[in-house]
Length: 294
Image (cartoon, rainbow, N blue to C red; front, side, top):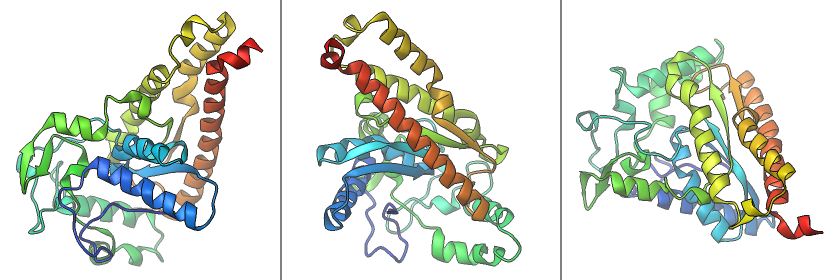
């Protein structure tokens, strides 16, 4: 199942300029639950998110769990972690459309508009026979769109019909400090300097959230009850987690595009899902006081 946040793309019947990250995560969870119910599927979900979609991993996990879905984890594809300040853009570079959406494609934090950077990268990825699918004209018409600025997860917010600077609102919206509500997260990390922000920081960023999620999710008093062997096992897990839950893939921000990129990404997702399930199983074993007593 593939979902997108609302934008001014023709596929959407209306725009939602004040949509928040919490709204986004809740809507994705609700749609997933409805499809699972309608198709009589097992209510287990793995969230995979690219770029800005990392912002809603916490709100999705919280909402999905509340409506009875079992979240197996989140896999980041060069995604932004849910913490303000990781993708800052100065206010003087932010503009809105007449519908009050962020003109993301025109934004140029490094002097080069996103639409130009994205089109250039897509053209380089695709073979000569496929490049015609990603001309600037086609990308602008079919792929690029403007979106609610609150989904950026930064201090600049749109509320009551105007822009405002509200870092506390951003932190609350992302659930940045609600560590126990985060899903276990794995990441597929690009390697090129064209996406240096993700290539250099994603592994460490999500390792931080995983460590806090595991620590804050431990049952009260469990650390006084576990055996020395279990304590050593937990410490070893925490030390090894960044390696186990990270894969590197050659490419930039669109490393998953094209036949080779898609195949490699799919293989990484399968491996990381196995790792997420293995980690979750070990944590359940350590936390199961009754099972240890037996």
